[in-house]
Image (cartoon, rainbow, N blue to C red):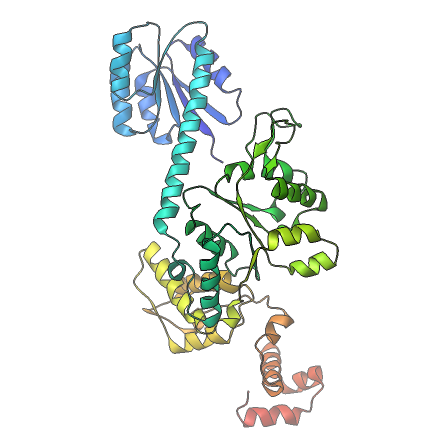
Length: 447
């Protein structure tokens, strides 16, 4: 998170130092002190979050500095700090775009502190509105966000359609990289809750000692390091949707607390007494088998049934047929558009190579492969050699190709010949096969 950058312009260095010290008590603030208007204007390229401007400066008037600031950045909030309580001047400055007008007295530092808090709230709301407009503007139309035309994906579209028409909980399962969060967003942004927040939390990424605070918030002083009140994810997702990714990694203690919140539809912040009502739709996801986790005692059965709702199982990419080529072309086109590169085609040989690969990393891996291919391409067409895969594939990935036994034998012998510089004798010893078998396969162009 970027610091909140405050510029103070004050020709009285002692007074300015006092304001800087006071505002720096909040570690989220990064405070810079300037003594002239020209010094401030030279540093506007650093993009301050807010400016406290002394009205009377030695080199130019507060009105002139305000005008110059607004010419550079019309959105930055500017608080005028003046030694005179002149209502006419204050009104004029506010009309010219000043955010607030504060009179210098013994309470100035506290009033300025409150102004900073209000500016932060205003900016946070503005950002939330901007994010929401962007998300809604995208309109998560299934066939535009989740690409593909395979029977498996068309079935997913039907389930998403059903999920958008009610508030039923949704549990999404599938291998890593299959697009679970994308499906959750598609449900949220096509439901009546679309104008409220979609809040995501990856359970496995949050330390167990902090997960309760992350989900339900905490009060100031509730534990060491809790210097301010924190609003939790459930509170932020009120009237919207909360997406709990990797849900089965949640520890048992937290599972019990989550179950109670889902049953009672209320919670309290850590260290607090206030009961907060929640109306957040819950969508959870995992790349593990939830039923197996319940059987193994790692996940509460009652919580499992509370979360199960409408189950959606995302197919791995290797089971989606020609969707691989549809997605490959889409990723290449998007990458070229973002990087202002000419449009690239994909050769038939490159397509064949893509279709033979099992993609253990699923859609996420395909995206990385195609973006690299676009960079490596030396012409307007992506060739077979431009398609490169990770060398860390496991034996299980190799077996996912579902070849015949003879096809596997050919692959294994070819691999060992390449590894040992086509030394047939060495390969025959390594694999414990007759060298005549290898020579025959070479002669018959099987390898």
